[in-house]
Each structure stands twice: as structure tokens, then as C-alpha cells.
Length: 247
Length: 269
Image (cartoon, rainbow over the protein chains, first blue to last red):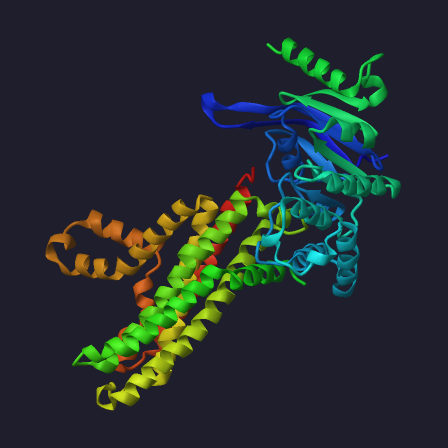
């Protein structure tokens, strides 16, 4: 069966000459349809760079990336995805409803269908009352939920969420957790990066651990956790092992 | 809805509600009131001064909008990653650039029209108060034509400002490059005239070659300035205006093409 997301021997460097630094080393990873995949790693491990490469915001030095079997250099793949950036930023003078209208229409939704979906999504992310307020007046958590709404609006098959819980209060985190679990129940694919190991433990089918630009683990929890270890201990153990083996 | 139109729509809505735009607009209205009051101190060519100042206020308002609002707005799209919201949808980078350009153009046209009406009212009031000072051949049609060419000149300025943002996403650098391009574009014709008429420079083939090269790269903005024609009620050469319009439109198209070319190669990290 075709993979939902594929990184095939991806390498990425930044800078030039002596200042050139490789941030991703030969990353190969496969995310299957219908699974929730947690992408974890310490700060600066290359998680956000991987996601930016996946969305074609950055170009890899080597390797190939595909979404739904389509090369990400072709814009057609964007119809298949919903994306939430780490810190979603919007046009401050547009209202939440207008922002969602733009998101829906740019994903080729009909006007009448878009209006119906917007109403439903606003309720789902608990923003109905602020729908006609300008986004500039929204709190950080509200912006995060609006960002999630723009990803959900056209009901795509694959979701790429960069730190979806960041900036959310416990109520917001609970809400986003529910939405992600609901997506799984509906057979959608979710690829998300996070620092919060508890979220991964509760929601993910499989995890990928990135350290200093290299994938040091990809698989199910069972194979990650050694007897008596919890996820945090296993994570720290793996990171320490990988950094001590790096020359 | 077409993707370019969608970007145009959000750019227009976001900009038209921007308080800085309202501030620029109010300042221009204030300048028109000053124009009506201050023109009285000129004891000669009063009507011509009124027309000249009115058209200059429209130009100044447009430039303030481009240099302080449009450049900043687009640079923030890139630096604050607002672009991610747009480019994660099935929208091409070229559609984003064109949508932004048309969105700003719409705001520029709307504000130029409103300020143009205010300027026409000011000029009319001054003519009514001092009928003797109106240029004998003054025509509102010429005034309108000079307004249209002023708008084309602002469109050219907007297009190369967008180009500089695609080259350097830093708003101050983009503003600096845009201002430099604007000043070169405005002084090009005069410099060319000096170089080709003065014997000392005429001998210097290298300098003339350099001048020719610069005049091919930078837009000749001065040629779009028809303030004197409108103020003095001078005759219009229609063929010249047609060619000028064609030159302006082609220049905008070319600059937008280069902007897309540069932006397509940019890494949006």
C-alpha cells in the first residue's frame, strides 16, 4: 500500500563554505495511512526543518519527499493536506470567519459548502463567539485553535501539525487532543511534532525520534520501551546514547 | 474563486482596515485644506500652484502607502511566517506575488480616486475664489490624464518595491532599495539631458554607455509626471501618452516576472 508521507534519504544543510551545517542527515521515514505518528526530539533536532521540507518551503540538498505518492515539488499534494505551523500567524485585520473562508476557498471548496463548514469548524474549535472579531484581538490559544481550524476546513486525508499543543491552556490541549483522536477514528493520517511526551504516549500509534538531524528511532511504543522504563526515560536514554556515539 | 483573486481579496481587506492607511488618508485631507489656505500667499500663478500642489499630495500619499505600508505588510508575511498559511494551500508562489500586487493596487487606486476627488474639489474652490488665476487652457480632462499617469508611476514604484522584498525580506532594506530606485527613476531624465548636452560629458563614451545601461534598467518615472502639462493647460501628444502607457505596463509586467522568478527560488525557512 502507498505511504501517506515518505522521506527518502533526505539531507539538508544551511549556510555556505566553512559555516555550512548539516541539519538533516539521510533521513528516511515512512508514515502509513490512518496512523497517528509522533515526531519527537530535543530542540534543534531538525523537526521543524523536516516539516518545512515536507511542505516544500525548503528544498532538500538530496533525497525526495512525497505526500500521498505525489512529489512535494508539485503543488497538487497540498490539496491532500491540512497544515498547522508551530506559531500560526494570520492577517490581524481579517476576522476569524474571513480567515477560514480564505482557507476553504483556496482549497477549492464551493462558496455555499465553505460557509457551512466554517460554521461547523468554528464550533468544533470553540471559536463561534469570536468568529467575527478581528484576529488581531485573539489570544495565543485562540490563534492556535484558528490555525487548527484552517487545517481542518477542507477535511483532508493527511494532517501535518507542528507543535499543535503549544500555547494552549489545559482546556485547549484537551480540545486539540480530542480533535486528533477524532481524526484517527475517521481514518485520517496525522503526523505531528511535539515536545510533550505525554501527548505522544496518549495519542500516537508510532513515534519517530530525531536527534541532531538523524533519525534514531522509528516504530511502535512497545519496541521503544524497555522493561520498567516510561517514555521519558526511554527518550532520554536514546538521546544520550545517540549523542555519545556521535563523534 | 481564482487563487490570485483570493490573495487580492485578503490583501485588500487587511490593508483597507489598517489604521496606518487611515492615518495617511487623513494627513492627505489635511494637506488639501492647507493647500486651499496656503495657496493664497502666492501672488502669481495661483491656479497653477494649486494644481501642482494637489497632484503632488496625491503622489506623496501613494508613496507613503507603498514605502510604509505595502513593503512592511509583505515583508511581515515572510518574516512572521504568515505565508505558511497561504502556501500550505494549493496556491503557487507566483499567484501569491500577483495577488499581493493586485491587492495593493486596488487599495492604491481606491485611495488615489478618493484623494483625486478631494484634490479636484480643492482646485475648483481655488478657481472659484480666484478665477483670474486659472490657466487659460486648463482642462479637467488633462488633469484626469495626469492623475492616471501618476497612478501608473505609483504602480511601477509598487512593482519594484515588491521585487525588492523578494530579494531581501528585511523591510528596511527593501524600503532603502525601493527609495533608491525611485530617486534614480526620477532623476534619470535630467541626468541624461545633462550628459548628452554638456561637451565635457559627451566626449566620455564610457559614461554615456553607463547612462544608457542605467536608463534601460531603471524606470523613467519622471516621464509619467504630467503636473506641468495639467497646471499650465498645455497640449497633449496622444501618441506619446499611448507609448508611455505601454512602457509603464510592460515595465510592471517585467518586474513582476522577475519578482516571481526570484521568489520561486527562495527558501522560506
